[in-house]
Length: 190
View (cartoon, rainbow, N blue to C red):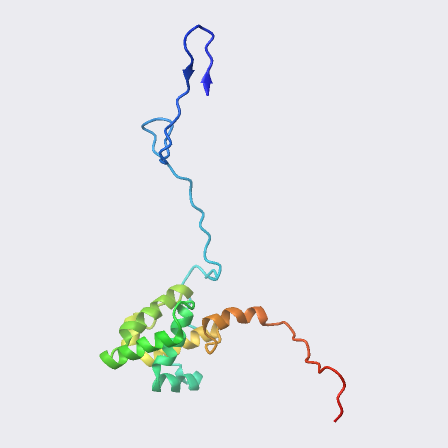
């Protein structure tokens, strides 16, 4: 900190940069370059292939899952709620998303203005190709078919749609573990 000087002159103090919280370079003309940030991806996202992947079922393959097809035709808010909960990764519940969808359907008659955004989000999460046409056009012209296709896609990717997001996140931890048999205590006569 102190510079030593053998002559009889007063001591010279070494210069220190003031503590301002702003990084200072070695010279006035040198720009500050922060260290690169190495952010880790979210742990629940699975790496996807480099290119776009096709959907596991076609848009008009609704007959491959008849119960879901019937539910979607008569009450699409249920299917939409299930899809939205998985796509949102549990941040919104099935009931909340389904209720918003139902309100939009009731007041506007055009719930596709809400549901097409979830198709876009799902495609970006799973690197799915945009087919047969744009997401909003698909939902506008074939709303029930699009919801059924999204439901089947998530089901084919291993999600149990009846469990919701939280149930699917707990499920892998309990799979494969054999449960101990239930043993009655003591002796009993019949």
